Length: 365
Ligand code: GDP
Image 1 (cartoon, protein in one colour):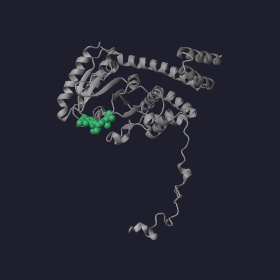
Image 2: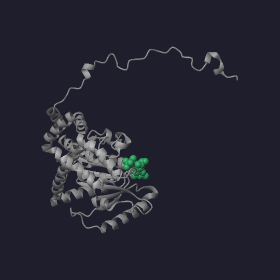
Image 3: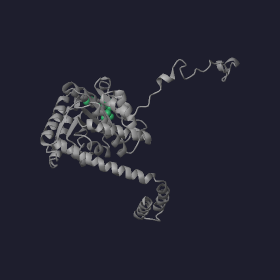
Image 4: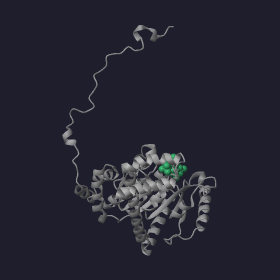
């Protein structure tokens, strides 16, 4: 067949002599100069207290690290920052993927910085990131305005670990951010279940973003999650979606009326807004700040924080006990056999659990 490639000159695998590969290391680069100095816990604390964002970021990386030596330094840094923490308002923002969290947080952040001043840290609890290998939350590019704002610090969710572990790290990161002078903390979480509880347990106000659907939006939302919300906001109230959003708001208001008044004494409000077009954002934040005034006056603000500290003490105990149990080499060996026994129906789950725990307790003696 007449085809240029049949010409011997073009025969498929003719290899031309190429250029020599270039070293991947720039020979002009003085590596010595760029080697990172190892900071001590005091260096981190000093940098954080000065509001140094680079050092704050490095300290958060330590908090997120699973390397034991990093954890030792991280815990020391957290301990030393603790007296300087707490002076912030912590807002949890939850919603299913696509609800408009990133778009809204970008607008919310710009609004609160403009209206109330101060500095804002946006953190995330993202239990799904382990699966997707990379955080789907907190991606800086998704918050275009905030990511270039001089008074904001955006930190994606730690990308590995159990929900409990990820949540604990977010809570510890809050402490570091507050010590660094961030007086507003947003904690973003994907509304897919357990993560809301974790988020709720570390914030002063829990904001639930909802969408108007086909009128049955209340079906898909768990009662427990509705009960956690201090405010429900219905996003995308723009264009030809306005009527639907208002109808959804009425449904939510009616549903909320069936619940007893929360412990805070504050009846959760339902508002509509558009994160994309910026409609109704002021009203959302007026609501949040009215709540904060209300609970600060009533004493519930401090009560909730104290209760949260207690909750985290128990969470921390539980997490460490579980870690100790599962990482024990003898138990790890026994677990496999026990699992098989339960699967084969040779042992009941309760008997298997008891045998393992008895063995564990015996090891402790
Ligand atoms: P997330 O997954 O919850 O973070 O949601 P995103 O912020 O990424 O938004 C999901 C999609 O909804 C994007 O295509 C946004 O442009 C769109 N969106 C977000 N807010 C609004 C809004 O207020 N109105 C409209 N019409 N679209 C919006």
